[in-house]
Image (cartoon, rainbow, N blue to C red; front, top):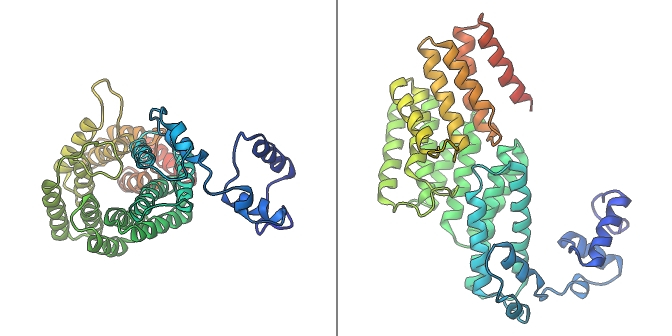
Length: 379
């Protein structure tokens, strides 16, 4: 296998463990190892691993959490049934709904595993409609994985995943997937300080998906960029456009879905714009509303990443009002959550840190918070 491998393989002990699992049937090699095994034995992949083998489809259905009473029937068929695609859609939606609170590494591993399973179906005999559906589902999961990778600070990898999702959306002729891929580009640019890049990505995305949820969020990202460029008129124009479009859309069935813009999410974006613009009263109002709508009655936080940025906003307002203790308290609470979007959290935390450095440079509490932000940046 090493003689035929184009890339460096893991240690012999790891290869041996994998090989034993493959031989026992406890797991199946992925596409790379299938091709390598076939080449090692001087044959082609399909000779060892026929693409029509129905086992994978049953695993997809079972993994979705659906009832498995029809698995035996599907095992006798080499066709991909509509029920299987429905199961995949349920799984993709579930993953997207787990984004706000599932640990980043866990969600990335699970998302990538399902992405491999979904794309493997393209080797099966599909109708044109089914082929488009598989590409669309792969696009949604790729978008999710790209978001999680960027949250983790894996900037280069996340951009590659985003581009792959964009390609899948284009191949599937799915404007929603393509629109969200551009929205992610706008988000990446915003957190990297490329505000003109945000506007360019928003324009490209709106040209593809002008009337969906992605367009609402693109308008919001554009507003956030204009706020940082200091153009208040353009901020209001972009926010008004987003609000108008959101009003025209039906209320979403599942507000936990990451690629759904609910009214509370738009409040979250408005909060950011007004904080940057120095409109403390409006910023505080929106921040408190974001925390209220993102927290269950029992105190459990449904949207911990939104709440973190809302607390930073309250910290900024407190610092501007002369309340250092309150500002540091809000700032620290924003940093302690288990689920973080590192680039976004750092962007907002540095805004509070800059304010504290300018106004409270000699205060020990301010210095302590600045150290905590620097430590987060180092991670």
